[in-house]
Length: 115
Length: 111
Image (cartoon, rainbow over all chains, first blue to last red):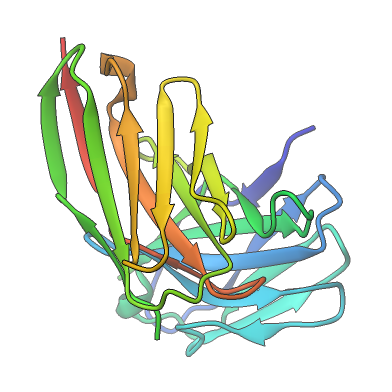
């Protein structure tokens, strides 16, 4: 049971390049999330998916797209990377249990640098 | 818009001391509140989750309290150890999917 996995762990991009960050969970969770974490700030929600086939914008969605490929996988795409997107990206998942509503489990993160 | 604040931003204590980390939030209509631990270069580990109807949760040396009316939560760590050194994050959900995080408190426990 690996929990939430993310690939790659590190990535360096040039401005204007594109890439996709991959996330998978093996806990049979319905909801999945993408966050970014910048120095001195809390995590901010980029997009989330409440169930397979649905996605919704979070607090900072501009410059990103997402795909909920199936129940296990949720990918984040940067179409044209900008230096402002340099950050650590975390994927998370959750299941709505009556006793632990929206308890989120996080992956190890992807460190992205855009030069 | 929910805003979450954690004070202090950093805290250094000697081993064995009991300590309290603070979290405040602006919108009291919360769904739940979660405390996380983050080690340098790592992901987040869930420590405690308090539902909106609860006032506290305990796990080992950790105790988290919630006062919705005043918009505050505290994380109490008893008998601190060097292994407790990490950043502690507070996060508040106002619905089943949207979670807002504080910037965290960086804790150092000195041997």
